[in-house]
Amino acid sequence: RWTPLLALVNLVSALSAALDHTNWKEKHARIKRVSSGLRRALETHGIDVLARGADASAAVITIRLPQTVDSVKLCQRLQHLGYLLSGESNYLAERNWIQVCLFGEFDANRLNNLPKVISREILHSESQQQ
Image 1 (cartoon, helix red, strand yellow):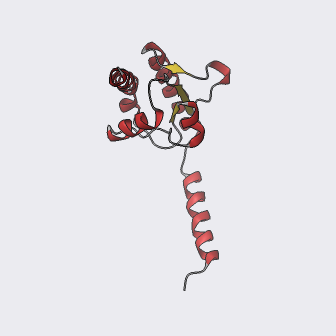
Image 2: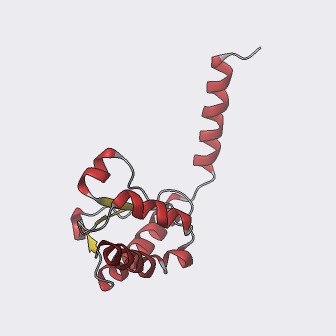
Image 3: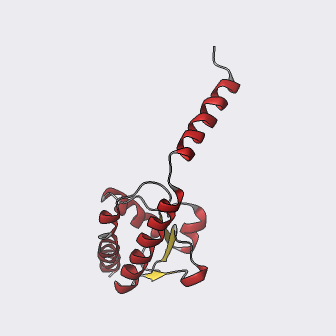
């Protein structure tokens, strides 16, 4: 018989194991390093990054899209290309923003191509509008 308490104990045990097996200094340093390079590359490709400098979170990069680009559709196209970005929540969709979140596991080498992919998809969306 399943008991809720047993399920909670298992979840807490799993969380504890995950926390114990993560080198948090190394993880935070990697996030900062990858985020910094990704932000520079996005800006180099003419992509509007919302927060900069001390105002920015290293783990979340918010991109403000041109009004000619539908953020939800762009997120769906990017997912089809293998990039899972945030952008389908009401909060982000109303503002036409998308977010790159670096909380979990990610392939830094694959992220190197993301600015080029987003730029290409923005141009594609804009050409469809004409």
